[in-house]
Structure formats: C-alpha cells, structure tokens
Image (cartoon, rainbow, N blue to C red; front, side):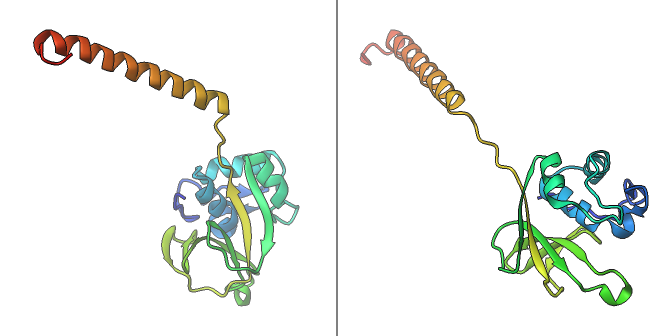
Length: 172
C-alpha cells in the first residue's frame, strides 16, 4: 500500500467523468490507487477512458477492478483483517453521502483526504473488498530457475574444490 492524498497538486484538479475533481470527490479513486500502488492520475485516466463511472460519478466496481487488473470481492459489513476499502457516511451532513479510505486493519486507515495513516475516526458503513491481484509465477519458471540455481551452485562448489585443493593439498 502506498499512501496518496487526493489534495496533492499533481492530480487534485483532474476530473472524474469530466465533472468532479479528485481533490473534492476523489477519495475512492485515490484509495484504489493506494491499494494498487499506482499514481492516482494514472488510475483516473484508466477509469475515465474505460468508462468505469456512472453519469453521476459513482464507480462501477466490477468494471473498475477488471480494467485495473485488480479483484473486487464485493461489499461486506464483516470487519476485515486485510487491506481493503472502508466506506463511511461521516460527511453526510455536509452533503457528501460517502467517503472511502484504505482499511489497513487493527483499527487503522489511510485517509486520502490527507494521505496519512492513522487510527480510524469514522463510523464504518461497509468494507469494499477491492484488492491487488497476487502475481502467480508459472511453475515452469520456478522449476527452470531452481535448475539454474542448482547448476550454478554445483559449478561454484566444483571450482572451489579444484582450486582449493591446488593450494591446500590436504583438502581432497
């Protein structure tokens, strides 16, 4: 996870769907960027280009995950132990019905409003299971790499034995 702030001057004025600035309404985009460890402007560009927002600027979760090469496992109320998104209604009285942060676990969040990791001060509405795909290394690569390593070490030990015995005749 890489912390980012939606207020960062590099992307705060970029628009979601051509209408809403990341600085004011970009908490979900910036939180996703943090989870995926990608710059928020790059994530926004992909989401805008691939039409991953509704006309009103809400994210289309499954489509966003697919286009970003991530996994979306849905929405849950069950407290999570792993990295995911946290949804709160903390700012609803100010006219902002949702705010998203990165849930780190153990009661801690990364809040995209300032990009800081802190104890969660918000009421939790839900968790959104948006996660980075784990890269699976093909078995053939692991086997090939293992064989190369064995071959390498075999050559090194053989060289050491031959060269050491020249200078230290009692080692044979």
